[in-house]
Image (cartoon, rainbow, N blue to C red; front, side):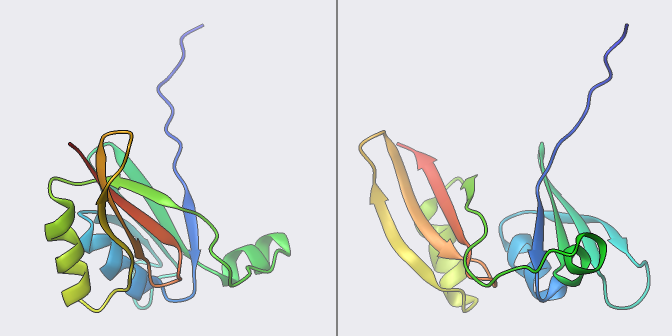
Length: 128
């Protein structure tokens, strides 16, 4: 039996798909798919190197699964970048909250935390 390469990726439930696309584009993700193709998207697929994620309107899990999406942080995304300080300043200039300023961690990485438009923590890290 031949196993085919299979890909897994998270789908983030968001209240404003376009606003979240703008945030993740700043992180280096590129939109690769949108549904519907015209008008306001209900879903956008994004890629950054080998990393992928989907952004889906919060109405999807409610309509399809009967699940109501809460307002508390629902995930943490950990992203490696070339320069933590430069990225933090880029996001700060774009008006995104910085949850934790850059600091050197005992495990050997320079790390900071941002909040995405939904308030979820996004860690930026660079090995030292």
